[in-house]
Length: 282
Ligand code: PAF
Image 1 (cartoon, helix red, strand yellow):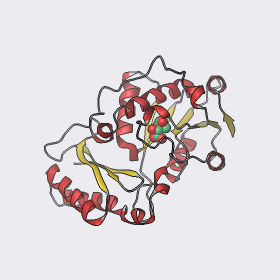
Image 2 (cartoon, helix red, strand yellow):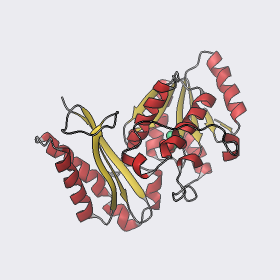
Image 3 (cartoon, helix red, strand yellow):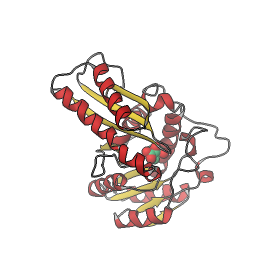
């Protein structure tokens, strides 16, 4: 595995490899790798000749009061994990390498951002779309792998690839969970022990909503109330949102039908957690 820190070297390496007819699987991350990331790398490894992993904590997608400074980082550990998983190139640029200061061009995402995380994190998806546009130009992937835990991100990336005509296949990969159901996240390490224990209610409440849908419940509001009640009675988490929307359009639903997402975000003492189920009615 080769670690590359400059845009020029990454671009020229990938151009050389693609010139030899090789397919490139790309896994963009902000590091502090966990099993969720490793499942993306494994899938990319299976489906492509080359695997490029990027580790870049992107300042553009953090709001002024968000956790950019405390976002967990451990490059040496990440490097060892990436090597074990058979990554060919680990792209690890500095902020100065990625952005001129001030930037003369950034992107604004026009749709799918006024709901879910986009509502409480204004500008977040503009930052994600800007960095991914740069990374897609630098890495020129055949396929790009994203975890379904960030389901709104997957929906936004779908729009980015379609609208800006990137010749990239988007590959969404299933959520990886802890044994008790909590979705794996780099931020889980910052949970206090009691919050970690209680956070299991997020997955439990999604399962309960799914069960009720199976039993015939079709009213989004009833399901949302049930999830909120479970979270508030079984934890001290402060709910940011619980929403049910069509997927991937992310539009409001009068009634449960078609493909839809049940998504939630909850603040614990030090950490805001998200989780979701994407379901489809016959
Ligand atoms: O999901 C993430 O880790 C980030 O949003 C991404 C896609 C690497 C862009 O910075």
